[in-house]
Length: 188
Image 1 (tube, helix red, strand yellow):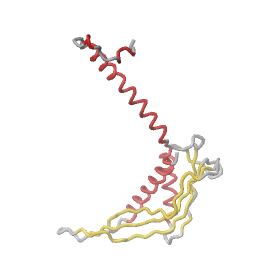
Image 2 (tube, rainbow, N blue to C red):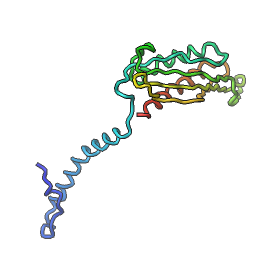
Image 3 (cartoon, rainbow, N blue to C red):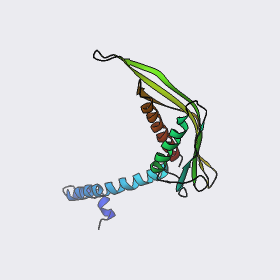
Image 4 (cartoon, rainbow, N blue to C red):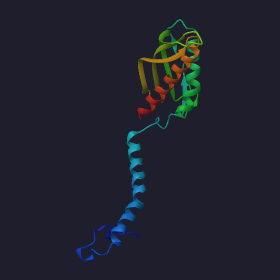
Protein backbone atom coordinates (compact mmCIF):
# COMPACT_ATOMS: atom_id res chain seq x y z
CA UNK A 1 0.00 0.00 0.00
CA UNK A 2 1.27 3.42 -0.91
CA UNK A 3 1.78 5.64 2.11
CA UNK A 4 2.27 9.31 2.67
CA UNK A 5 5.71 8.56 4.08
CA UNK A 6 6.78 7.94 0.49
CA UNK A 7 6.30 11.64 -0.16
CA UNK A 8 8.94 12.69 2.40
CA UNK A 9 12.27 13.61 0.91
CA UNK A 10 15.12 11.42 2.06
CA UNK A 11 16.79 12.73 5.20
CA UNK A 12 20.38 13.91 5.17
CA UNK A 13 21.71 10.60 6.50
CA UNK A 14 19.91 8.68 3.74
CA UNK A 15 21.50 10.62 0.89
CA UNK A 16 23.18 7.50 -0.38
CA UNK A 17 19.86 5.66 -0.60
CA UNK A 18 18.38 6.38 -4.02
CA UNK A 19 15.46 3.95 -3.70
CA UNK A 20 13.07 6.46 -2.11
CA UNK A 21 13.24 9.10 -4.84
CA UNK A 22 12.65 6.44 -7.51
CA UNK A 23 9.74 5.04 -5.52
CA UNK A 24 8.27 8.51 -5.27
CA UNK A 25 8.70 9.04 -9.01
CA UNK A 26 6.96 5.74 -9.75
CA UNK A 27 4.11 6.62 -7.40
CA UNK A 28 3.64 10.00 -9.03
CA UNK A 29 3.83 8.43 -12.47
CA UNK A 30 1.08 5.97 -11.51
CA UNK A 31 -1.13 8.66 -10.03
CA UNK A 32 -0.65 11.26 -12.78
CA UNK A 33 -3.05 9.64 -15.30
CA UNK A 34 -5.71 9.27 -12.58
CA UNK A 35 -5.30 12.89 -11.51
CA UNK A 36 -5.44 14.15 -15.10
CA UNK A 37 -8.56 12.12 -15.77
CA UNK A 38 -10.23 13.44 -12.63
CA UNK A 39 -9.22 17.00 -13.47
CA UNK A 40 -10.51 16.75 -17.03
CA UNK A 41 -13.85 15.47 -15.69
CA UNK A 42 -14.11 18.47 -13.39
CA UNK A 43 -13.30 20.91 -16.16
CA UNK A 44 -15.85 19.30 -18.45
CA UNK A 45 -18.58 19.53 -15.87
CA UNK A 46 -17.93 23.23 -15.35
CA UNK A 47 -18.10 23.98 -19.07
CA UNK A 48 -21.39 22.16 -19.50
CA UNK A 49 -22.61 20.95 -22.85
CA UNK A 50 -25.75 19.49 -24.27
CA UNK A 51 -29.33 20.25 -23.43
CA UNK A 52 -31.29 20.07 -20.19
CA UNK A 53 -32.03 16.45 -19.29
CA UNK A 54 -35.80 16.72 -19.79
CA UNK A 55 -35.42 17.57 -23.49
CA UNK A 56 -35.66 14.35 -25.44
CA UNK A 57 -37.67 15.40 -28.53
CA UNK A 58 -37.52 18.28 -30.99
CA UNK A 59 -39.80 19.71 -33.67
CA UNK A 60 -38.84 21.97 -36.56
CA UNK A 61 -41.63 24.34 -37.49
CA UNK A 62 -41.54 25.47 -41.15
CA UNK A 63 -39.79 28.84 -41.25
CA UNK A 64 -41.73 31.83 -42.55
CA UNK A 65 -40.29 32.59 -45.98
CA UNK A 66 -39.95 36.28 -46.83
CA UNK A 67 -37.95 35.60 -50.00
CA UNK A 68 -39.13 34.95 -53.56
CA UNK A 69 -37.47 31.49 -53.57
CA UNK A 70 -40.41 29.13 -53.08
CA UNK A 71 -38.50 25.89 -52.42
CA UNK A 72 -36.25 27.46 -49.80
CA UNK A 73 -38.73 26.99 -46.93
CA UNK A 74 -39.15 23.28 -47.66
CA UNK A 75 -35.41 22.69 -48.16
CA UNK A 76 -34.54 24.47 -44.93
CA UNK A 77 -37.19 22.64 -42.90
CA UNK A 78 -36.27 19.24 -44.35
CA UNK A 79 -32.58 19.81 -43.76
CA UNK A 80 -33.10 20.92 -40.16
CA UNK A 81 -35.52 18.06 -39.42
CA UNK A 82 -33.26 15.37 -40.81
CA UNK A 83 -30.01 16.54 -39.26
CA UNK A 84 -30.75 18.55 -36.14
CA UNK A 85 -32.38 15.78 -34.11
CA UNK A 86 -29.56 13.34 -34.76
CA UNK A 87 -26.83 15.91 -34.13
CA UNK A 88 -28.41 16.88 -30.80
CA UNK A 89 -29.24 13.29 -29.85
CA UNK A 90 -33.00 13.91 -29.86
CA UNK A 91 -36.00 12.21 -31.44
CA UNK A 92 -38.12 14.15 -33.94
CA UNK A 93 -41.66 14.89 -32.79
CA UNK A 94 -44.68 16.96 -33.70
CA UNK A 95 -44.90 20.49 -32.35
CA UNK A 96 -47.51 19.54 -29.75
CA UNK A 97 -45.45 16.63 -28.39
CA UNK A 98 -41.92 18.04 -28.66
CA UNK A 99 -39.92 19.18 -25.64
CA UNK A 100 -38.13 21.76 -27.80
CA UNK A 101 -39.06 23.54 -31.02
CA UNK A 102 -37.05 25.32 -33.68
CA UNK A 103 -38.79 28.14 -35.49
CA UNK A 104 -37.74 31.11 -37.51
CA UNK A 105 -37.99 33.44 -40.45
CA UNK A 106 -36.00 33.42 -43.69
CA UNK A 107 -35.36 37.12 -44.12
CA UNK A 108 -33.09 37.25 -47.16
CA UNK A 109 -31.71 34.97 -49.83
CA UNK A 110 -29.27 36.34 -52.35
CA UNK A 111 -27.53 34.16 -54.91
CA UNK A 112 -25.13 34.73 -57.81
CA UNK A 113 -22.75 36.97 -55.91
CA UNK A 114 -19.50 36.76 -57.93
CA UNK A 115 -16.54 35.74 -55.78
CA UNK A 116 -13.80 35.09 -58.32
CA UNK A 117 -12.85 33.98 -61.78
CA UNK A 118 -10.79 30.94 -62.68
CA UNK A 119 -9.24 31.05 -66.13
CA UNK A 120 -8.32 27.76 -67.71
CA UNK A 121 -6.62 27.61 -71.11
CA UNK A 122 -8.38 24.32 -71.98
CA UNK A 123 -11.89 25.35 -70.95
CA UNK A 124 -14.04 28.42 -70.67
CA UNK A 125 -13.66 30.77 -67.75
CA UNK A 126 -15.28 29.43 -64.62
CA UNK A 127 -16.96 31.81 -62.18
CA UNK A 128 -17.02 31.06 -58.45
CA UNK A 129 -20.22 32.37 -56.89
CA UNK A 130 -21.60 32.81 -53.42
CA UNK A 131 -25.05 32.87 -51.93
CA UNK A 132 -26.09 34.42 -48.64
CA UNK A 133 -29.09 33.58 -46.53
CA UNK A 134 -30.21 35.59 -43.50
CA UNK A 135 -32.52 33.99 -40.94
CA UNK A 136 -33.99 34.64 -37.52
CA UNK A 137 -33.88 31.47 -35.38
CA UNK A 138 -35.35 30.56 -32.02
CA UNK A 139 -34.92 27.25 -30.22
CA UNK A 140 -37.41 27.11 -27.36
CA UNK A 141 -37.78 24.69 -24.46
CA UNK A 142 -41.54 24.05 -24.49
CA UNK A 143 -41.48 22.51 -21.00
CA UNK A 144 -40.09 25.60 -19.24
CA UNK A 145 -40.88 28.23 -21.88
CA UNK A 146 -37.24 29.35 -21.90
CA UNK A 147 -35.39 30.22 -25.07
CA UNK A 148 -32.44 27.84 -25.41
CA UNK A 149 -30.83 29.75 -28.28
CA UNK A 150 -31.83 32.68 -30.43
CA UNK A 151 -30.18 34.63 -33.25
CA UNK A 152 -31.64 37.49 -35.22
CA UNK A 153 -30.37 38.36 -38.70
CA UNK A 154 -28.01 35.38 -38.66
CA UNK A 155 -26.23 35.12 -41.99
CA UNK A 156 -24.84 31.95 -43.52
CA UNK A 157 -23.22 31.62 -46.92
CA UNK A 158 -22.13 29.00 -49.39
CA UNK A 159 -19.86 29.05 -52.41
CA UNK A 160 -20.53 27.20 -55.65
CA UNK A 161 -19.53 26.93 -59.28
CA UNK A 162 -21.50 29.04 -61.72
CA UNK A 163 -24.35 26.61 -62.49
CA UNK A 164 -24.46 24.72 -59.18
CA UNK A 165 -26.47 26.91 -56.82
CA UNK A 166 -27.94 23.86 -55.07
CA UNK A 167 -24.43 22.90 -53.88
CA UNK A 168 -23.96 26.38 -52.40
CA UNK A 169 -27.35 26.20 -50.70
CA UNK A 170 -26.46 22.80 -49.20
CA UNK A 171 -23.21 24.29 -47.88
CA UNK A 172 -25.10 27.22 -46.31
CA UNK A 173 -27.63 24.85 -44.71
CA UNK A 174 -24.77 22.77 -43.27
CA UNK A 175 -23.34 25.91 -41.69
CA UNK A 176 -26.75 26.79 -40.28
CA UNK A 177 -27.26 23.34 -38.71
CA UNK A 178 -23.74 23.47 -37.25
CA UNK A 179 -24.36 26.94 -35.78
CA UNK A 180 -27.65 25.87 -34.18
CA UNK A 181 -26.10 22.74 -32.64
CA UNK A 182 -23.09 24.67 -31.32
CA UNK A 183 -25.29 27.48 -30.06
CA UNK A 184 -27.73 25.25 -28.22
CA UNK A 185 -24.99 23.14 -26.66
CA UNK A 186 -22.93 26.14 -25.54
CA UNK A 187 -25.79 27.47 -23.44
CA UNK A 188 -25.63 24.65 -20.91
